[in-house]
Length: 218
Ligand SMILES: C[S@@+](CC[C@H](N)C(=O)[O-])C[C@H]1O[C@@H](n2cnc3c(N)ncnc32)[C@H](O)[C@@H]1O
Image 1 (cartoon, helix red, strand yellow):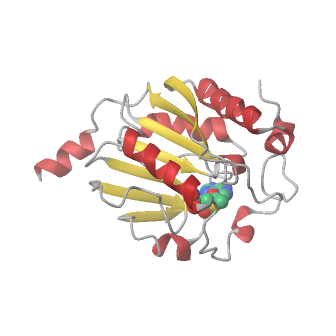
Image 2 (image 1 turned 90 degrees about the vertical axis):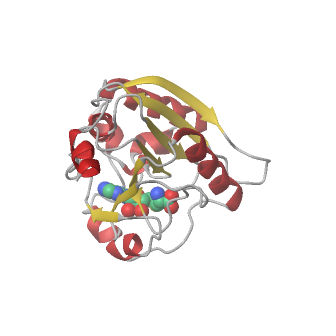
């Protein structure tokens, strides 16, 4: 059982206040971003429908790969509007409302990049991801060792890199909608930002969304 105290933050004011100002910066160095892009290349199906959850102005998707549709969900409209990979986006505070406004099995894959540490209800969010990703589709959760310290959850502050991986694995397990949960260390040479991932495959979503069949046939 993950105790509620683990999800407290130094700054408990509404997230909308903190994310009100656009941050058109990168949160990882080039080597770590390349590692995220490589993971997306390996796990996300070409031509698939992809969700960039906790998105900003850059999605780290491989520039030479075409996806049928990329949707972003984040906290700042200016950042999301500037993201060239997004076909659609919305602002939603997942700590206030972890329900994802998408149909069952609407997505083939999703990513959460350097953001899982800000979720105060991560098990609910990951359970929802399992619902909206088709069965067998991946969720790639990546993280490094940087954060906005006032907004990160207490558990993240207490743990080291290995502990972070164990915690994210635990989120997937407790969500109950995931299988093939695996831990990856894609860090490059010393001196660069480390890059860790926990990846799992949806065990819950339908295998094929009815909405997509309707779209294709219309
Ligand atoms: C460090 S940035 C990472 C942005 C982007 N994923 C990237 O790789 O550059 C953290 C992101 O988490 C998102 N975020 C933080 N708290 C959130 C919340 N309560 N609900 C939804 N998104 C949130 C913010 O929109 C912000 O873009």
